[in-house]
Length: 476
Image (cartoon, rainbow, N blue to C red):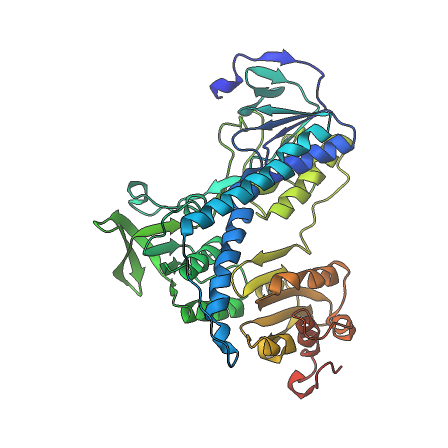
C-alpha cells in the first residue's frame, strides 16, 4: 500500500459517498449524489476536469476543426469557377488559442461548478482504499460507499526500443510547436486516424502503421473507404504489418516493421503512439480492498457498475470499457445512484453511439454485421454509397457510405454505420430507432428533410427492398 495511506487521521460519519477522480465521470457521480442529498467527498489528483477537457476531446476537436478549414479551402475547386487556398501561418498561435479555450472550459464547466453544490467537499490529493475506508492526504475517510473514476492514460505498445526514443502521445502531440516535417503514427484506431489526418492537413508528411486495418472494430467497408480517402490526401497507410523495433536516428526515428514475412524500415522526424489507453488503477489499493481487475487491466464491474467489493463502484475509462466521455458520465451517474439507493439501475450500451472525427466522419451505433452474426442472429445488411444521397451530390462531396444491419425475420434495426462529412449529426436518429426497437421499414417510412445527410438513413432503409437508383428525389 502506498505511503499516502499511512498514518491516517480518522474522520467518521462525515460522508455518504467518496468519489475518486475529478474528470467528467467524477463530476457526474458527485453532482448526481449531491442532487440526491448525499454528502460527497470528491477527491481529485492533477488537473481538474480530467482527460476530455484538458488533453482529449476539446483540444483535439478544436485543432481538427481548424485544419478542416485548410482542406475545405483547398478542395473548393470541386465547384466550377471557384479557386481558394489556405496554409498554416502560425501553428504556435493556434496551439495558444486552443490552450485558451481549454482553460476557459475547464474553469467554467468544472472548477466554477463546485461552489454550486454545498454538500460536495472537493479534496486535492492521491487517494487509496484501505480495509475500511479511503485515505487521502493523511486522513482516513469512512464513506458509506465509494465510486472510482480515475480514467485512463495513453498506453505504450511493447515495441523493442520504444523506451529509448522520444515518442509522442495524444497528449504531447497536441502541444507540439513547431510542426515536424514528418511523423509516423503507430496505431490505426480512432485517435490515430483523427490526429494523423489533422497533422497531414497542417502540412506534416504522415505515415500510419497498423497491425490490422484502420478502425479495426468497425465495418470493413468503412475502413476500406476511409483508407482510400486518406491516401487521396497524401497520407501513407501501411496496414497488416507488425512492429519489430524502433531506434533514434540523426534526423529522428526509424521503425522496423514486418511486411509479408520480410522486414522494412520506415523513418520520420517524430513518432506518435496511438495504440489505445490504459486504465489508471495503480496506487489505489485495489487488491487490498478486494477490487478485482479484468484481463485487460480495467476495474471489473457488473451491470450495476459494482465492483467485486460491494461497497465500491467504478465508472468511465478506468473500467476499460466504452471509453467515451459521455458513456463515462452516464455510467458514473448510475454508479452514484446505485451506491446510494441500492442497485436499481442497469448500465445499457445497446444504443451507444460513437463518432470518429475524421473527415468524412465515421459514426456508428449498435451491432456491426459481424458482431450480429457472432451472436447467432440471422441478419440482413444494406449498403448505400453517398452517391445516392442528394445532400452529398449538391455539396459535390460524395465521400462515404451508410450501412444498416437488421434482423432478417423481424426487420428490427440492429446497427447503423455512417461514413459521411456530417455523419456525427446523423447517428443519433439511428440510435433512437434502435433504442425504440424500430424496424428498417419504420425508418423507410419516416419523413426526413430533403438535402440533409440524415436523409441517407431513409434511403439506406429503402435499399433493403428497393433499387434506390430508380427513385426520384423525395420518392418513397
